Structures are given as C-alpha cells and as structure tokens.
Length: 161
Figure 1 (cartoon, rainbow, N blue to C red):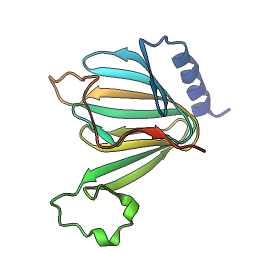
Figure 2: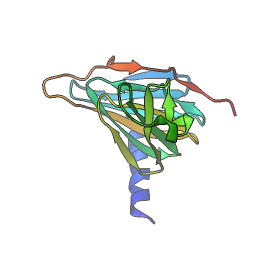
Figure 3: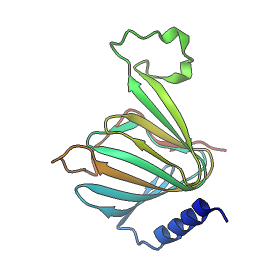
C-alpha cells in the first residue's frame, strides 16, 4: 500500500474524530472550525462538486489547503491596475473585473497541499466532491488572526450539474 495514501487516510479518520467548535453552512458545502487561537486556525471543509468560494483575500493570515479526497482547483490573482502589462496577449478568462489577472491555477489532488500568502486574491473551485483541511497561520508578528479578516471581491456559490 502507498505510504502517503495510508497516512492520508489515517489523517482523514483522525480529523473526523475531532468534534467541531462551530459549523457553518455555505452555498458550496460547509466548514467546520476545529481549532482557533490568535496565531492559528484549523477548519475541516466539505465542498460539493461545482462549489466555489468568493474571490477574496485575507488581511493578516496565510491560507493553506490540504485535500483528503477529491479534486480542488485553486486560482490566485494579482492586481494589475496601474501596471504597464500587455493584456492583449492573454485570454479574457484570466481577468477579473479588468483589474486583476489570474497568475496561477493549481489543481490539488489527494494528499496535496497549497499555501496562499496573506493579501493574495484567491478562489477555490471543486471539480469533484472534496473533503479537506484548511488552516490559517498568523502572517505578521504581533497581529492576531481574525475570523473576520476576509475581503471579498465576488460572492461564493455552486454550479448546477
């Protein structure tokens, strides 16, 4: 048996045994707060196929994703206002509100992790049903992470299949 697979399955089972402190239903699925401190936050996420987050960023925390099951696409964007970049050579789908450009789209599969720095615009999209862990880490010394530090550019939702 593949070691990474067995460790991932063990970690999923262990995470399922942790009783959430708080559960929040979302249009794309649900998030379960498992641990919170001023420096670290841990969530278990269940994302339905076609579910997507808002395009957003966090002011004071780095965002990490780990997939136990499923396929999760993470898009990251950066602001291009005031930049002398040639937009004519890029496909239209790379732009958001003519202000931001998609700089990456990473596909997370089972046992894969991705980090998104504080202040980086990003969005996830579930290609399949996803079970994962999302955690946040303080990005600035002396600044506590907040449950309310999210700045949204668009709304979240779920495509109908």
